[in-house]
Image (cartoon, rainbow, N blue to C red):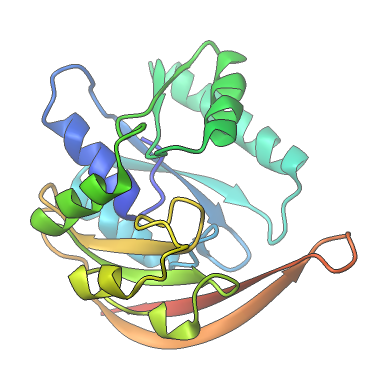
Length: 225
């Protein structure tokens, strides 16, 4: 299970745990080894470990440098996939919903290893998925927002009906286009909630080689309790 720590991963895993078709043996997470945080989401590694402990599935981490190139990412991914294949893994599960290019990329990479990709949430309307999340025993906090699509006030909020109602019309209700990312601190398959306190919110800007192209994000730090 490709585990980001967020709501889509949690929804996908929840569906699989109640089916007999799959035996989920590992949670696979990319971690920034320099910052000791989940890649992209910015959540502390300690909280990721606490999540995995509450779930009761072995965590496997792909350790990445501070600013990995795509070549470095694929090299580290392939090494980890080789290990998982040795452990008997035959399929890789994702929480993607409708991004066709991303799905094709994942399938292409896995095909090289004779692995198949599974997408339990594929093409399910995001309104239906968020309703499923809110109606279930899931709890999440928003840890990262795209500063070009949402303002700082959305970062650090609990993912509830109020948050969803406040989203602008141009933002996908599940943040599938990268508008926001979450950390799930409780779910039906957790043995106990993950304890944390809300820390400070910081702004980070990442520039590419192309002039005028940049990415802007707000990150809310979660401090383990």
